[in-house]
Image: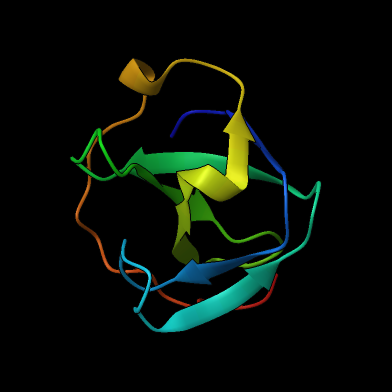
Length: 88
């Protein structure tokens, strides 16, 4: 995955699917940094597929709640489902 930092502009839900009504997996706090490992294939409504901090899990974070360092072209498109994973 890409080692890109996401700096939350606001607290945000991280979801199982890249849409607002999808099941919430975790809650991310403002200014929490995460690694982005994928993205959806919708440039008009981008979502980031991220590694859950301190966990093996992954979830979908709406791009409007985050700012990114790096280039979106470097992030692979994925349709994976988010999962809570195991605490590490």
